[in-house]
Length: 353
Ligand SMILES: [Zn+2]
Image (cartoon, rainbow, N blue to C red; front, side, top):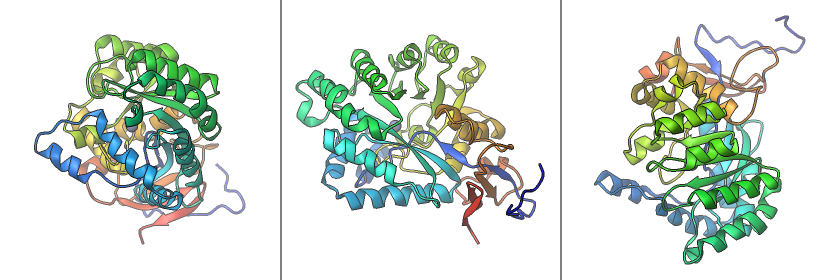
């Protein structure tokens, strides 16, 4: 490639350069934390979808400024570990105004020195306490006034299709309404047990089905043949002490894999894609190259982006200099900050020195 005028040369000193990580599944807009719930899990208490209500209460009570400051702090943290593109979901407001506010906050995270943000509407995260007696009334709120208010701020409509959250019919209703509002689709599927989420994602042609911890062979085949990106979240499986998703079965069936952090205060309070990559190597049996590809190009596929997640002429110059000679070190040296520098859009935006 001929060097153009104004080109900035950065000497990586023989260190490994990778594409910036594309973290295609996060919940960065929230207040408070759930360390007590995590500690309880360590003594044997199982995770259930209802824990989300704790964060909903804290998020509703927070000021706009505090919500934005918290989301920006996490986005900056993500950038320092090499993430240059982030998907960010709403889902801790669960009223028309609080969901709209969460998406407005997500849209406000963007700055040159932070990852690029792509917002997702997740009004169908759980049924909030005030609607548990009549979940269908909540679905009507989500598919009507809430989507009307939120769709202008979002690129995708997501739903938590799981026991304790939304069943297949209610999930389908929400997703079809999201599509009618011009949004593309993603699904939280098959996290806590076998269920209809993966098949629903395939049926509706979602961009991505996420979690996928518990899959039948038919689920695997449906995702692969529908071209739905399989977004795996090993840090959530680590935090909840669950089984790990069948990554090798998905790859063998021809599915495209993405790896993401699922950063959220309940089940995966990390922004570290290097940590996610290390888990994927050890627990999914991915090679370091497969894991790195899923954490970059796979995430881009899950977000429908063709100009990030790889380094080539025409792609965005979003890249990471690792303080290491090869990507193997991401798994070989877990828990160690290996990011030496981060370039976003061709500009050095962070450096460890
Ligand atoms: Zn999630």
